[in-house]
Image (cartoon, rainbow, N blue to C red; front, side, top):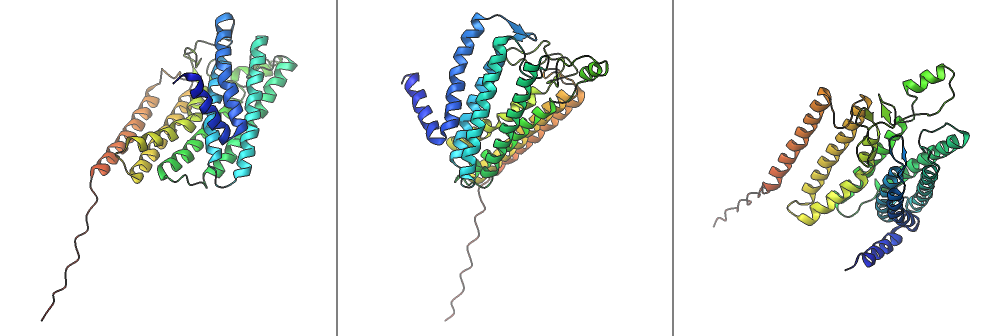
Length: 328
């Protein structure tokens, strides 16, 4: 089986689920090799990272996000028409976001938080409005999913909890819009604004970062929780499907496993956001963050042990009812 026919069948399936989101999935996926070639040919950097790193990350992220959301909207039992239109608007807004990111890369300018010129400020303002649209559309789909039964409790709750955690991850983006101390000091001194908001905490955006991801290695970075939270949309439903395929747990056991995983996943998102707000790099947590991480790990491990024990315990067999004596 060659790759092209497989991708073609996958795309036709996504089109049946939701045409506009399928188009976003396909265009985002097609952008990946284009960006990869541009990355090889263009050695420019922006704020310390290769200029094509951001479009690569966003293209991959949107391809995953849109593909899974297309499947979810196709399963809606309530708000079906509203959910379809929410998905369509989300697809257009996301594509516009990608276009603006690429335009700024071609210009050699930062797309996020850049207000150095009127054009840059207009691009950043437009992107902020687009993100708000994407957020609102995701909420609409989430509302429909919470009234949808997928026929399997574990998968149903995986989808519901996945989209809920994803909304939380999207919400982290709003924390990046606040004024930094450096920006406040510059404004107080009467300097013209160059940036507005930041994803770094305790450091200026553009310092040393992890390969490809670019997450700061010298200070806090809100992009970690933002990224991890958004992709609960894929992780939790895939977990539910894997549990069903593997067997060993009944529907109740798989549902409990999904709840446990969702709680642990949400805990990781909250922990990474807290760590970032403390100005700490992802790979350099301090004592309180480590203690919280250990506590979360132990809680999830304990839950997994209890779940495994309950799965091995056979259900109690009720004692047979006494047979009434028959007297002559």
